[in-house]
Amino acid sequence: MKIALINENSQAAKNEMIHNTLKSVVEPMGHEVYNYGMYSAEDPNSLTYVQNGILAAILLNSGAADYVITGCGTGEGAMLACNSFPKVLCGHIESPLDAYLFSQVNDGNCIALPFAENFGWGGELNLTYIFEKLFCAPGGGGYPKERVVPEQRNKKILDAVKEITHNRLTDILRKLDRDLVKGALSGEKFQEYFFANCKDEEIKTVVKEILEIQ
Image (cartoon, rainbow, N blue to C red; front, side):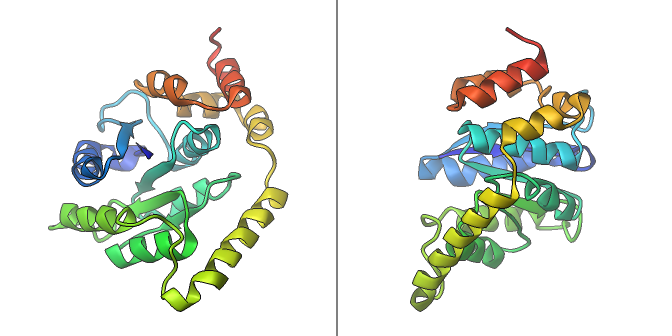
């Protein structure tokens, strides 16, 4: 699984710690981590939580990433932004229990974490346990086990609803403010990671249009 990490400007100083914590948990499981920044508080390519949502949607819809880890001060803004887009199912996660139940019951592909609220002494330990429980088993396994069938049915219903209530991502990207989207795609490693892993030619074409590259 390709797991993307995205940090916005208010919590960019924590990027290295979050990245190292995520890698330490998921790489032994066989997953790959791609850090899309922001890489530090001084990173010139600043991201808002809205841009986190744009970037997450592009990565997930194109197949460049299978899962996105993001957040903001409270995690709420990043969660709302991510869920504004098609084929992104983002949960607001505060604890390992949240992580496990979101994975097993809701089978999403993105989480938003509160990197400031209640993030004090031991914060990195909570992150470690969250990542462990998020990826300890394939998503959608259900909890409790007797609820597996209705939970999986409800997930399919939600996916079908989102197909109707959301426009195609390529149409959305072309209608959004060009500078807003371009800013979301201007991170130091974006082009290297995205173009190596993108599986959707139409999204790739739109991204090239936005970045004005051949």
